Amino acid sequence: MRQQVANSKAPGRVNLIGEHTDYNEGFTLPLAIERYTTIRVQRQAVESSVSRYFSQTLGQAAYWSMDASEFMAIDSTAANRAHESASSSKAMDAAPAWSKYVAGVINQFTKLGHSIPAIDLMIETNVPLGGGVSSSAALEVAVAMAMQKLLGTSLDGLAIAKLCQQAEHEYAGVPCGLMDQLSSVFGRTNELMLMDCRTNALEFIPASPQLAFIVINSRVKHNLADGEYRLRRQQCEEACDLLDVRSLRDVTESQLESAQVKMPDLIYRRARHVVTENERTVQAAKFLRSGNWEQVGQLMNASHISMRDDYEITCPEIDLLVTIAQAIGSDGGVYGARMTGGGFGGCIVILGKASLAESISSQVVGSYLGATGIQADAFSTRPAAGAWQCNSWQ
Ligand code: GAF
Image 1 (tube, rainbow, N blue to C red):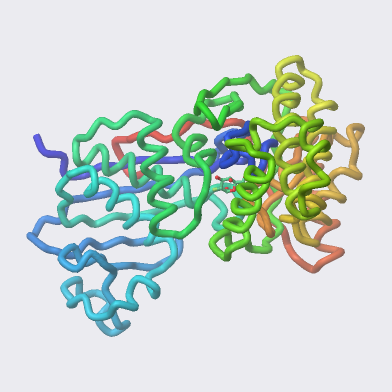
Image 2: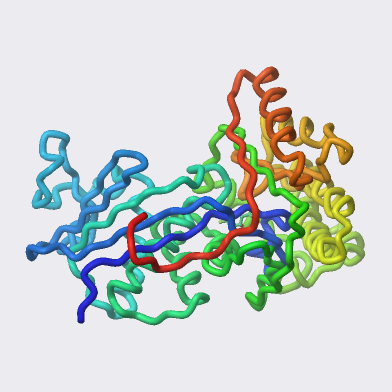
C-alpha cells in the first residue's frame, strides 16, 4: 500500500577533531550527538500543487509551488491559504533559511526521477541552530529519510548522505564536505567515527563511559554561506596547484616545508592547518583507542591553535571559551578543548571526565558570562545513533 505518512529522526554531530579536512580528502573524528531533528511528512488529502513546510520549533511556514518549482511569496494576511499563486521570483530569497534545505533535498528525489506528491512537512528540533553542530545536516538527513519512506525508495546510507550534501551545495550555496551528513546517517551509540574522507570509509572507535563530550554554544552565530567557507576551500585548491598534488591529503609536513618558499604565506598557513590537522586526527584516533585521553586532549588544544592562527576561522568569544575550558585542566576533568564545526562562532567541544561534566559546564558558562555578558548554552553528550525512520512523530 502507498505510504501516506512517514516520520524520521536525524542527529546533529560534534566533531572532536579534524576540521576543514573533509573537503581536502583528509580525516575527521566526529560523533553524532543526542540532539535530533524530527520530521513528519504526509501526503495531502486533497489534490494540490503546493507543498507546505512548517517549523514547529521556529513557528514559521514556507509554501512551495510545484508548478513553478519555487517558493511562494505569501503575505501575512494570507498565511493560512495554501493556494496562492507563485508571484515573485524574489520568493526564493525571502524563504526562511531552513526551508531551502527542505526544498533542496526533495528536489534531489525529483532529479532521481521520482514523482513528488504535494506534502505537508513538519519539523521539530533540539539541535542548536547555526551553532556548528550540524543542524543543517540533521534537517537534510531527516527530510531525506522521511521522503525515502514516503516514496518507497531504497537509497543506501552513503547515497542519502551525498544527496543531502548536493542539496546543501545547490540550495544553501555552501560547498560543504561530507562529514556532517555521514555523521548524521551513520552515527552509533557510544562510538566515534574516524572518517577517511577520500574513500568515505568509517572506522568506529568506542568511547569509554568515563568520557563526556561537553558542547558549549558561544551564542555567537556563524554563517558558512557568507563566503569565508568557500574562500578557505579556494585557498586549499590554490595550495594544491602550487604543490602540484590532487589534494592536501597527499602532502606531508616536510614536503610542505620544502615548498614554503614558492607559496604565499597565507596559502602556506592554510595548507599547514590541513596537513597538520590530518596528522593530529589520525593520532587522536590512535590515542582514543588506547585510552590515552590526556594525549587526545593535547591534540585538540593544538588543533584549536591551528584553526585560530593558520586557518583563521575562530573568533574572540570562541577563543575565550576555549581558554577558560583549557584552564580547568585535567585535575578539574578537562583533557582538552577546541572549537568544533565550520567556524566563525558556534560551539566548542570539551573532552572531559564524565563524573565532572556538570561542574565543568557550569564553570565555563559562569566565567564566560562574567567576561562577556553572554549566557552560553551547554550540554554534555555521549555518541548517539544515526538517523532512522520511526513509526510516530514523537
Ligand atoms: C561544515 C561543513 F559542512 C563540513 O563539511 C566541514 O567542512 C566542517 O564545516 C568543517 O570541518 O560543518
